[in-house]
Image (tube, each protein chain N blue to C red):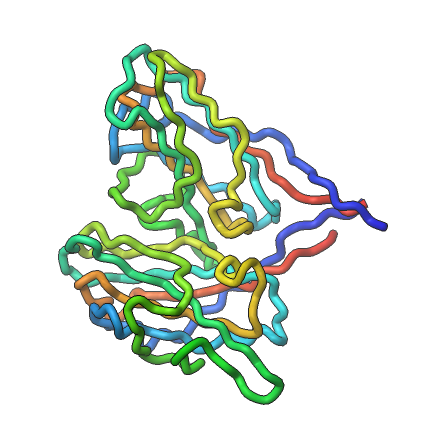
Length: 162
Length: 162
């Protein structure tokens, strides 16, 4: 008799050049580079986000919104959700946004470092992983993210029969 | 044709030193030590909570709140959700907070013993288990938790293929 168990890959840090020092905005956020899952073939991905907010007091409904975008590969060209580019940088979002919201972090304490703990991507897509995916972060806290101390990391998730 | 069956590990009680005698509070609660799943690789965890309340009439929210925190391991360190530390003790939360609410136990009768029955951790994470997780309990029943008789326990869940 064999047993089905979790199996994680190693922790990978995303490039966050434009996430560092990201100011507050309801419409201008950060997008990660796309993560191509066509080779990885992971059945899910565990993501961790750490955001070091500067010394600005929170106001009512100070929040960070974490969205995901999908990448569809048609055999020759990548098609990303809405205006996601697939490369790390800033992104303009409408409000409300048509990206899929996966996590909201409340900013409740001045100078707080927000830590998501691990959360998973596939639930945003009904339990399956698209060809590729990426993260979008909107800083609606009134504070600015510090120039360092931020991180967006992930691990590929599979299941193993042992 | 192979059959997939449930397989539960043994009953494991978490340390509840600081849960015993926990006073009623909207913000001051208890946190468990992190449960490390990196070796166990379980697909889920069944958790059970028993809170033996003191003989004080229900007040405040007349409820105990059971939250879950995630812990992402970056290869060197644990990264738990927000101000969770990964060690058993007390914790102060904000309202709202960034933990995931898994269960609410209502306190309707003085001196009642609140029993959650079994519930599963993966429901908080889209059907998966992160690298580690822990429990946060906020007792806002109006009554103090008794000095003994309290239990927070779990069983690892895997599946067998036979």
